[in-house]
Length: 222
Image 1: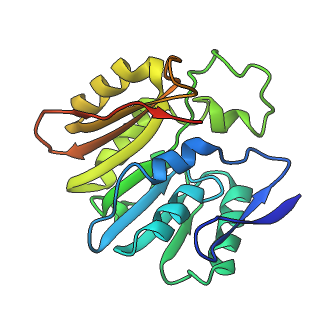
Image 2: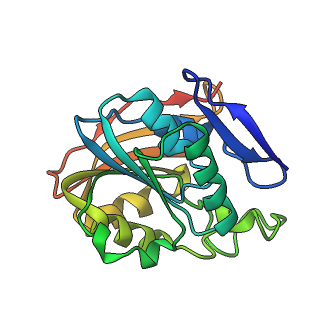
């Protein structure tokens, strides 16, 4: 069942489906991990309900436009309803497409790409996830490599790519970013409580950036 809920930023609202995968605090952490630059042209990859793109737009007045990319037809349609609900048709676009098949008109188009992707390799974790929820959590339809290839293609030179991923895949993630000239510039681990091992990592990379990473204090998801 679809419900309208407050975004808790101004008067913005978001539509979610109570029977499908709903956004978590990870999406909020990602939306707050980077700040917008003037005239920012933003993409939200694996956008789901559109919460990352909407949250980022709501907190940053400098954003020029946001495009939501979601392969699931129902989620993309729900995102479009949220855009209309908030009267943001001129500031947002919704693309129901696989990231591997993003149209050529978006090549080197974005100054910032945000992404909360599937975290799990196929065949590991979330074995009991429903058929609807599994693609949101597991790399069934999109591998990490395919995600990074799409980000590299769609980013302008000097553009930023910010994502959240599993903490125990940080070495793989940083290596794959570097191999694509997406140079990691900022990193922050996320833990449930103080003293606990991090479960997630936030990374911001710059296309064509110089080496050198700013490692921030661990973010507690209390």
